[in-house]
Every structure is written in C-alpha cells, then in structure tokens.
Length: 250
Image 1 (cartoon, helix red, strand yellow):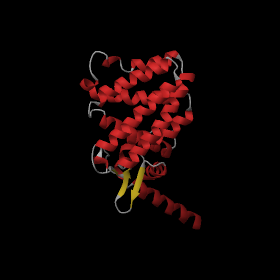
Image 2 (cartoon, rainbow, N blue to C red):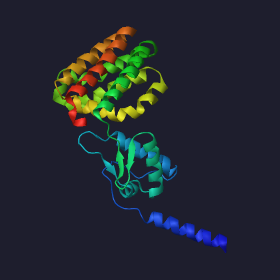
Image 3 (cartoon, rainbow, N blue to C red):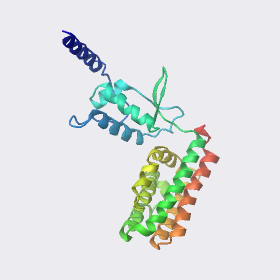
Image 4 (spheres, one colour):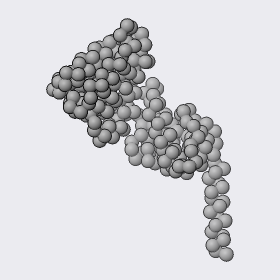
C-alpha cells in the first residue's frame, strides 16, 4: 500500500509539471530531439540562442520565461531549469529573486577587461598560427574579405561585421590550441556583441580591414613577433574605443 501510494503521488507531481507548459519565447528555438538527454539538448539550444542574441542593443537585461522556453523546445520545465542552472554557473545567466532569470549584461569596465583578455589570448594564437597553420589555412583569411575589395566595408556593414567576427575566431582556430578556444568561449558572447555594435562607429570598419590585411600579411610571412603585436594592438584599440565612446554600457 505504501509503495503504491508513493507511485501515485509521483505520477501526480509529473502531471503537474507537464501541465505547466505554456506559450512562446523571443529566442529562436526549435523542438529538441527526444533520443538525447532533454537537459543536454535544452542546454545546447539555449546557449546557441543566447550566443546569437544582441544583448547590448537595449539598455536593460533580457529576461527569459521558463514557460515560453518549454513551449518552444517541446519539453517540460524541468530540463529547462536544469539547463539554465548550468548556464548560470558558466556566467551566461543570472537569477534575480522575485524577478526571474536574465541574460547577463556586463558593465563597461567588465567589457574592457574581457577585450584585454581576448587580446592576450588572440595575440598568442596568432603567434602559434605562424608556426602551426598551413599556407592554405592562412590564405583562407583573405577570402573572408573578397567581397569588400571593390566596395568599402561601410557599404555592407552587417556583412562586414560578420566577417570581422569570423576573422577573429579563425585566428584562434589557426593556433591549433583547443584550450585557447575553450578559454575565451564565455567571453565571445560579449566581445562579439560589442564588436558588432562599434564597427560602424568613427570609421572603425575601414581601419579594421586595414588592420586585418596587415595581420594576414604578417601571418603569411610567418613573422611571429609582428603578427602577435598587430593582433594584440588591434584588440587593445577596441578596448580604448569602448572606454571613450561606450558610456551606454554603464
């Protein structure tokens, strides 16, 4: 009798959780595969959606709704909560009592520190790339900017912004160091968003592509010291720009 009563109570709890599922979320999500752990898939889907969200285009933090996420992903709220807990531990989300769960938005000082850390890691990646990357891999960096040879980046600012971000990711990849990529993974959400927002300011796009061409030339010549220095200064220039022009972050 006791065992039977316990089973019935558990069934009631599960039913109550399932009945809490409700409507949609602004994040771009699709129902997940039922053949893999719900928590793991919810985590991957939420992290991907967060990484694609421009969190600095507005002054307030973006709040997530469990019920809407549950509806969009087609699962109960339990794996959603578990996934959000993992993302909070990684610094992507934060919970505010009686208000909800928000995508973390950094202050200007924190953004500058992130860019400085990115500068240190990416410059070392460039140094390693001169040793580890093949000629073909380095050559692929030039092809990222082919469409801007006959027009200025400002004429295609959104496309250039994406190429700019891909360029910096590619340099990390050319290092051959998996650990470097993992080290800056949690910075990418914020640094990517700031690069995208600032690329159209103060003619930064034109100066950016000039910097990129010099970096590529240094990599092609296998000039280790120059490649490292140029990549570091490129990111430090972004940090200086944020410090001077991005008061909206405070």
